[in-house]
Amino acid sequence: MKKLLITVLVLVTCGCQTNSKQDSDNINTVTSSEESPKPLFYTPEQIQKLQFSEQAGYFIWIKDSLAWTATDKVREEIDLSKIENPQGWLVHLDPEGNHRVSFYRSTRDGQILSFADVFYNDSFEISGFEANPKRTVTEEEKTMLEALSSAGNSITEACSENLNSVVLEDDAGWNVFFLTPPTEPGVIPIGGAQRILVSRDGMTVLEQESYSKSCIHLQPQGEDVHALMMTHIVDEIPSPVHVFTSLSYDYPLYIATSLGLWRIVDGDIEEVKDKK
Image 1 (tube, rainbow, N blue to C red):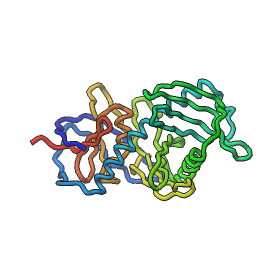
Image 2 (cartoon, rainbow, N blue to C red):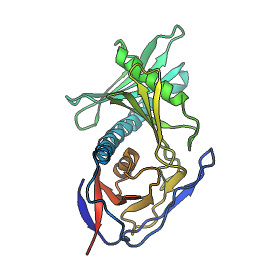
Image 3 (cartoon, rainbow, N blue to C red):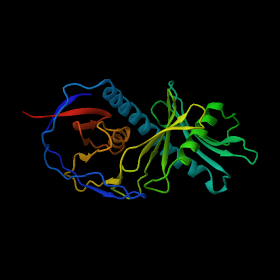
Image 4 (cartoon, helix red, strand yellow):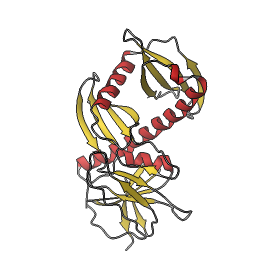
């Protein structure tokens, strides 16, 4: 967390309703920052939330980026229409830099197999591809897929029929993040994202957290837009999805919450201090 000065901000935003008709977040177009009360200190819970948002947001960005490029690679190499019982994909990050995105299917007798592995080097560049690898799918992979399935089955509303997913390990189990994918050029979907915590065995949903109350879209227009801003009313701390969005679209993102104004840039959440 850092503190900084802010003077001028330009943005364009728009929003639409969720499938379950909830109240819209308050989205404003602004040209300058307004004074807002700042806390004299952060509570341990607030500090933990800030750290979680930064770290989870960064890993969501990395995993989602690899999933996109891996999907494009698989489509080039395999006719996906011939894959029976697809079970989704998982991104596996390796401390040694040998990353992998695996795509799974189930057999008629319930066996889980990988039908494609896409490999990456430590610069996150594709370094290899293998169709129908002979390796055995690990128990951890099966558990992560179970957690993904349990989380998906618990969703009652969304801003898109198709959602992108990211699975991150948590002390209590598995955090499964669902993201609204972009469908229109120049439109940034940020509404509808949610986190679902699933037990270590992948079977039980423990927590569900929505990061917005409406299907918000950010729509920068023109070359003069250098940053984006939105209000966040479901929490006093910016969420991992705000960090992910800023990193994905390479815009500084200003988030107004009940605590004040925050700026997200390069994956860092910074408290905004007005110039005196």
